[in-house]
Image (cartoon, rainbow, N blue to C red; front, top):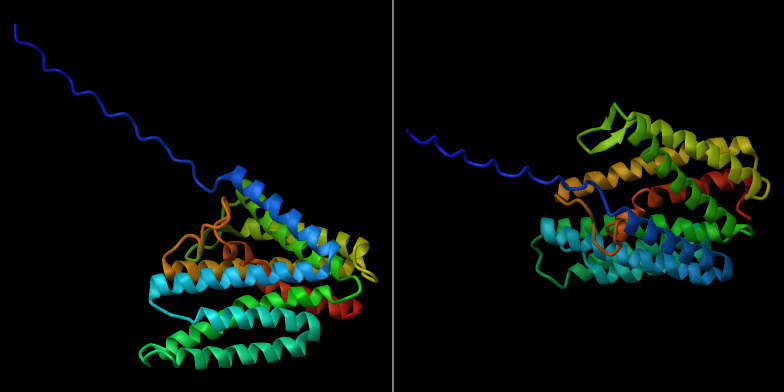
Length: 287
């Protein structure tokens, strides 16, 4: 009798990889960063200013490194780092005027520093450098300016809490109920439902913070503050997603396990800082 042909065994199905980041690492790093920030914020204000400066310098290093790796753009890091640190300190010591003067001097330093290399690519290098100076240290300076008020630590804590709560609301509601994409070409994971979650969470947290943390604040001001924070945090997140898509990368760095780089944590914080500073000045004054 003819033998039946032996059947070829089917290859085992490929194992599915878990999507997303390492949640345990992300939580651990997040808790550690939060502890450092809160401790420095309420113990010695100058230490917290140092934390801002450190975050700015590392963020600038990540951004300029990715620009050079992916686009060949050589934004000069040295004047950016020195000017960025000076910007934060000037904003803390001299307010908005000090921040603007330091920003102008940093831009000038970028233009002059780049003159030490050949003229090819000068325009794109200095343009990227001035953009980096505005995007990272100048916006971060508003966090230091929040700290100068009598209730400065409470203002900074409000800023941080509202931004984190907005991001958390967007993630939680989007993960559970998200169906309609918000900006699929920029950030496919973001949904309109998630945006509504960010708004609802931030407005609720804003009302509580203005009522119980900020001197002279009212709950209705907190609702407006939360709405503004949800909008600015979302736009900041989308803005950095746009930059990373243009560069063809997922994260700006690998410094923080489960989070990416420093810039991946600052994306929603940076544009939110001037919004919170301005609204708190309008609502309860700068003192």
